Image 1: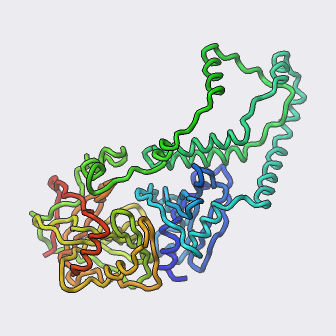
Image 2: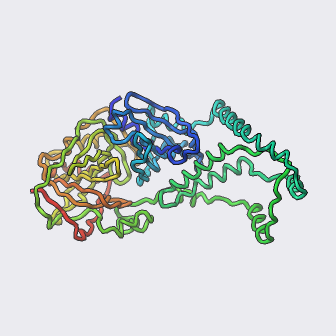
Image 3: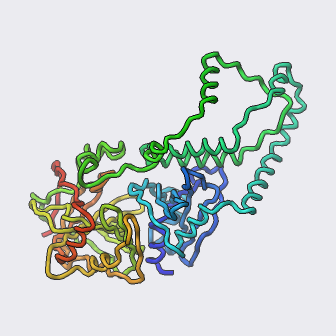
Length: 489
């Protein structure tokens, strides 16, 4: 199977999957192969599958590269924590972790864009979705029972030792009282309530990981055998006893609206009440949008003209997938392509369109722009910008994207045809360089911006189609704050 197809059927979905083994070495994992070929294998850790809110489950998965493929992409394993909608055949990725051949973490990233991705039929995504959402089989239940038997057997020696120890009067009296235990449905409800608390700074990833770890720890902890002697528990104070009695007699009812709001990431837009002016106040981790000193986009003026080394592009023909993010069109492409700037190679991840352009030159914005998102295995980020200006001539790559629009908002579509990404690169290597940020939440700074000087054409018809799909989707120009902007001469 070719690189591009694997990228499109795997990487956009599950594959940044973190192994529980890497973070909790004391716990056993249960990796099962979902798909394999000569270059990589896709696996899921069945032991991490947990029930979240109604109809939703969470699980870890991973892609393990062959040595040849690992040398090409810069990492050996990419793991992802995914939330699956078992009712609507969809999912989104919460977190990705990249590891080397020694299972050392190269970088971790919490996924900001948590838009649901619909599961395509006969795809790797569907295999993963089925593994997570299917009910447990008889074999699965038998396996769990066997593990419980082994755990109970391991606890037998300590239980016998306890039997030989004489019990004091207080201990015997305490042992005579039946111990209260949560019913299975109460335990499950408690887990579900914990899973719903996803309003933390990292989109709830820590909560989900702790829940998985807790459940796995419970599974491997030996069950305590009945003992004739138990240490008497201290009698609670009247106030505590009254509070606990009230809590037991008055069951808490979850507020569906609050649970839904807590589990959903804050939605940002380019206009209105959730527009750029308030991004920095919407979530704590987005504070850089308001407080950062090296934000993007900027107006390119008062540049320093020098002899810059031209960027080297490795863009070629590839299969592609078009995604409607609700704010723009995003295009995911095959692996192995990238850009080298100042001796550093950045791997191409995807590209998006903005109308008008976000970057302005001497106060003037282009009719449209394409942004290429790129990154290195150690977490460095880069954005390549190519401006598009109105012309009689249509842009062939943009037309191929428009010809394969998803039919629904939030949907995606992967055609059988390919596109040549070289068609989005100008023939002139002239460019600008500056350090900025992501131009959307979380507005992370330290991003290298490469802005090509020569614009490419876009037709009036193409602009009209994009304008019908999406409104204004460019962040306002940000202060330069004394930054250095280099321009090739």
